[in-house]
Amino acid sequence: MPTSEVPIEFSWRRNVAMLWIAQFVAMIGMYACLPFLPLYIRELGITDLALAQKWSGLVYAGPFFVAIITVPIFGVLGDKYGRKMMIVRAIIGLTISTALMGFVQNVEQLFFARMLQGGMSGFIAAGISLTAATTPPRFAGYAMGVLQTSISSGIVIGPLVGGVLTDTVGVRPLFLIVASLCAISSVIVVFFLRDVQTPQERSEKISLFSNLQLAWREPALRRVYGMIILVQTGLMLPQPILPFYLESLSAPKHLLATITGIMAGIVGVLNIIVAPLWGKRNDRKGYHDVLSHTLPWTALAIATHCFLPSFEPVFALRIVLGFFSGAMLPALYAAIGKQVRQEIRGGMMSIASSAQFVGSLTGPLMGGWLASSISMSAVLLLAGGIFVAVYVLNLRGEKKGERIP
Image (cartoon, rainbow, N blue to C red; front, side, top):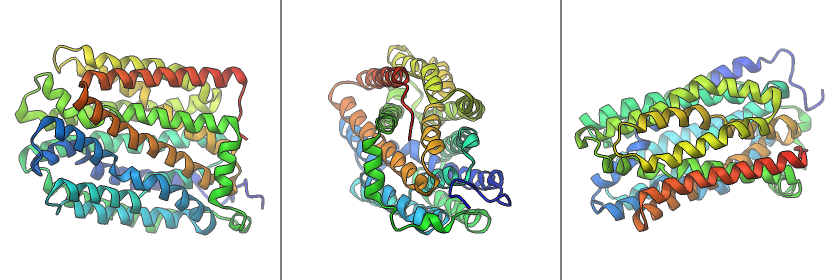
């Protein structure tokens, strides 16, 4: 059987459904506490605003210091020995590291626990690799869009639940709840998720070095990986300062966590609604078309944040941001997953995840530094400018007619 085909008896739709449920449960857990890490940093004794902003950027970026290196390695191991195995490893790692965060006593320990999380987890990256390897290429965009809704759904429900609980019982107890939800997700993965692998896929020729060579050698791949880095950087730049930004716009302090959760949730709601639709458009017209329609509006929505007089109009901008921002990364991932050979698809998708982690690392670090050194408005304007730059890169690639090998 050719390595580019999936056995007839294998149901890729069932696999996507099981992975959707597992990711949904895990994302609820993760995003029940993630938006409130800046408040947890205050609880750990960092009360100076400028110092809290710097630490917020570091803590947000912590997992990605390690994940940039480990995720491509895990991707190659998944191609050789089983992608489901990598998902199981990742969700168990996420469970352990998240539980540890509930017991830290200072911000340095929190930073270390976040780095440990990056080294042990990589759940979403492993799930993307499995989906890319087991879904027929003509349905890749749709499958990636559906998976995006599981992440977005967790982003909606998690912050809303986490915000209410943070305002009532505090941040620390949330971490044990998160770990429990991740444990439930691991059960779903172990018993219901399937992998498909052929003997040809286990070739010893598969290696991280050969995958990196291909990623660098092909212009279209280089451009896509570069756009993934920039898109994720732009999305992550404002994340560490969101509670501080809303506070500066006179959001009520006793409801700050709840309002932060709602603002994060709005983006997720729109992602849930539109991600499958953007995915279908991507299957029909390609990622260049999707990016050309989403990047300008994303840039405008983010940059306009810094001109608002109060926190109430932020709701409208978050709606616009949610409608367009959720389409970009799934389109770029699908572009890679559709066209690279199946026997290396997991490894190449893991390099894409590593590129996303580069953005997840640089975005919060830059955001925290800019906010503390210049202003929060500078963070928002830079994020908007980054999406304009990606728009230009996409136009150039489209004009050159670049195709992924």
